Image 1 (cartoon, rainbow, N blue to C red):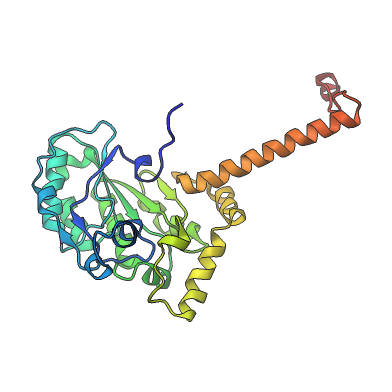
Image 2 (image 1 turned 180 degrees about the vertical axis):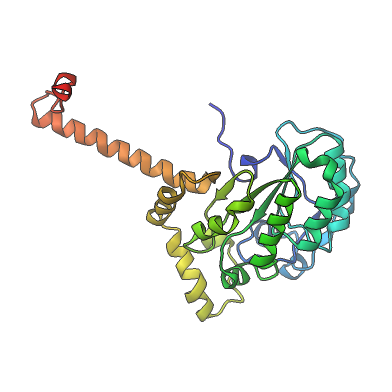
Length: 289
């Protein structure tokens, strides 16, 4: 049985990154947690002032990856790394790769990419991260990232330029991911991904948050991660065009599907016992009578 793909590998076979750190400084960032707290590759201050890895920029990237490349995955595309990003992107595309561009988009970056890579439209998919339709919520969780208006403008621009577009609402940052869908759906050619915030207690950095912020932004999100709320999202959005559930949401679906299956099985067994071993449901003849 094939191993179930999770995280980045749900979207691409390989990922490419060219710097350590990200000035967007998202509170929930798994890459920041790994680099600063888990593996001690840099300090928090260094993370907020990223450094380009020139050796990675200088690689040839001549290999064609069968299932595509996600670039980037541990940092976003910003005006500070755009030049190096364009250099590596060109190499990946020239090698024939399908490239999934995932970022909290800056207008000055996305317009340049769109204008300079028109010959590669069939190899590029933009997937912009939008975790909330609230400017205040985005500002709290992603303090250095572009605001909602800029992200939606980038999405619309890429769409109108004829590129493949999608949205990642992972992690969703409040109890209204449906609002993100409504705000972005008209500019999406492909998928809209919904995912939970992973490892909330260990990864999230609340060191600079005050009690008011915790009450206003953190507690509501904790509540919105409860299985009952997740299943409400699923029921509401499952048939909407392009909606896909990341492994974190799918795990909740699977868990409750198993529970429901066990409950149904137990009900059948209980009914059989009450009927002294005979099946108590209607037969096909009864159903058609």
